Length: 406
Image 1 (cartoon, rainbow, N blue to C red):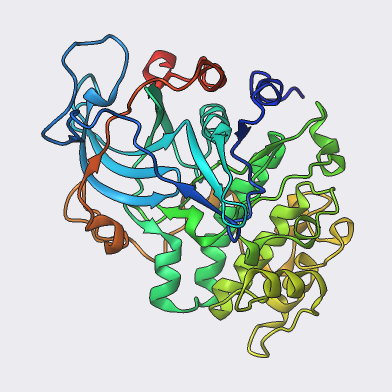
Image 2 (cartoon, one colour):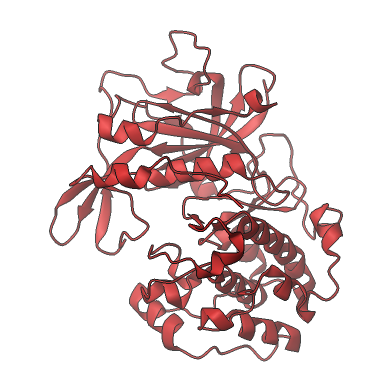
């Protein structure tokens, strides 16, 4: 089976950019920081729902085709907005728009040295979202670029983060957890079958749609299998450091080099523990302590967990990836007695009833998102000038309009 997407020789381009490097999943957040720099003229107006720099009409999709309604999230390299389509057949439809910088400055806190980093993960995310369609993976609609920014337009998931539900409930009843976990399992299985390792499974990347069903989001950490035979996925080797430390597998944290699809099943085990107990099994006051515990500490399970849950967790959280449940395929996990009552065909067809259905007042209701973000002004800075040709070359062919495929 051939690989489903390609990065257009991005790796070769990056090597030519020294001392400019690509944004690496291996950036140590404890020793580096992102430096905010102005990418636009100070006399240029800020873009918001009332003021846009859209003087000339264009046949291509652009920010002018959307109205920013609110902020859903922020990060080091950009923001996620709730937007409404202003033009075309989708006029009035609500979307989530991720706005990312093509490049940013990274400062080493110790040496104070500045390096330009290219956000190749934005292109990676676009490529995989364009190629993947699944009931439990966020739907992708459009991509375009302007100046120093790229824009990804996706399905608006009004139910918010599963993380918010875990915070509200502290821990979930086993039946409730199984509802969400069965959908997540099918999404991960689909990615693996397509030759993709997700590598960043955590509650913050699991959203709920308006009906209460799961959707995986944020594909900036994915890894494409290098071998054309998906059956050999578990033999692929990658050295990238990626993910959230509490959810990362030992083979990723100890930099041993080899990690394949088994890292997703480790994270799946951590997620199960988090859902059923209210916390990951390996925690600590800093990254170093957590890393040490993930790699070396013995798994300690709560006595109130059912025997089936305990057995599944021990098999998923095996520190040896080749012995981890799931190393032979998702079917091994689906057949475990913890999921014994699951009708997998009913799950895939979304016929199972969600334990929680979001209460929404309107299509643009954002009450299920953290007020820390939704209270921020719905403003995006202008895209600014084009970056250097070396940076721009990485984003050739980035634009995509789903309407063209219909």
